[in-house]
Amino acid sequence: MPRILGVDLPDRKKTLYSLTSIYGVGLTRAAKICADCGIDPDKRAFQLSEEELARLTTHIDQGYVVEGNLRREVQGNVQRFKEIGCYRGFRHARGLPVRGQKTRTNARTRKGKRKTVANKKIATK
Image (cartoon, rainbow, N blue to C red; front, side, top):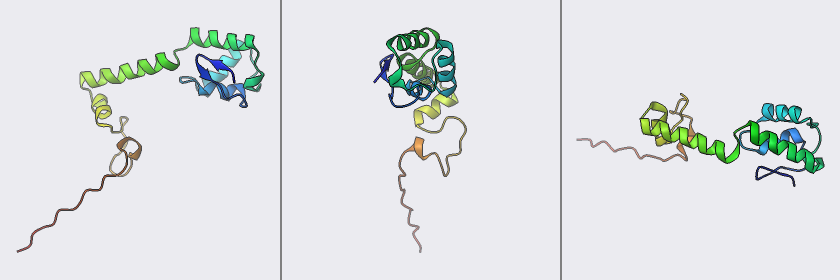
């Protein structure tokens, strides 16, 4: 199983799709990386030579912010939003959707499992 920047690439997948297992590398960026390094995107990951892996590693490391550094950067941005007290920071802190989605019926991924609230009984005279 080939490793790039501390990430095990799925070896049976094509290189193009295999590279997307690196945090910060999507399909478009993976295609650009393959083109820049001169690697056939249809080649399976286990078929890559050591020299090709080294080329991929150096190209990704020098050209893009990925994995731990990107995660740290994103966390820092979210933390900054919370500290300055902007709307997005408030939504992050409360665990609610940040980008304007409705929350009355959806947003279960952000809000978590439903918490049932019992109805109050109205006293009648």
